[in-house]
Image (cartoon, rainbow, N blue to C red; front, side):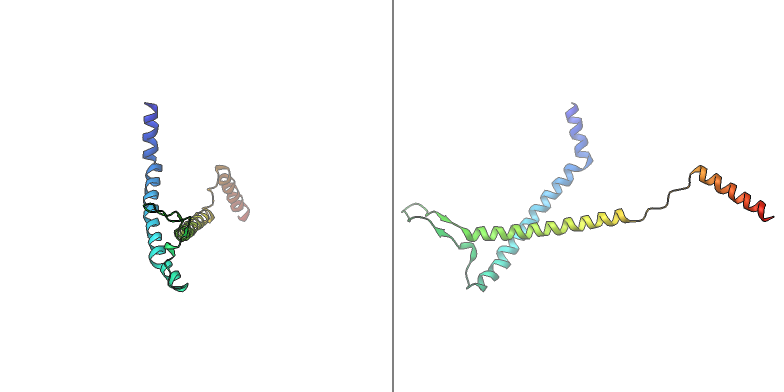
Amino acid sequence: MALLKEFKEFVIRGNLVDMAVGVIIGGAFGKIVTSLVNDVIMPIIGLAIGNIDISTLEYKLGEAVEGVEQASIKYGMFLQNILNFIIIAFCIFVFIKIIANMKKKEEEAPSAPPAPTNEEVLLAEIRDALNKMSNK
């Protein structure tokens, strides 16, 4: 029963919900980046290097055998996935930098000066009373 109570507190605290939202947004963002790379960037690169579809680049291994797909190293898809990773990693880096700068500015914000202690208030009153007496 204690384990169930701890789990309930964990879920209510928001960590699990935040993580789930992050995973969902990350998955959607990954699809957007994949589309950007596959549908925009790679065709431009392919056009620049001679109208080649980079995703189809492969190195065939061995000889083709009837009824069996020939083994191949699909380095074009590998290059495309590397580009996906670089773009996603860069976006995460920028996002983390923005968050860090926001936290840094929050920490650097000047806080209000602390309220004077009772002793300081009493000493100020004594000082003011002495000043009044000496000015008379």
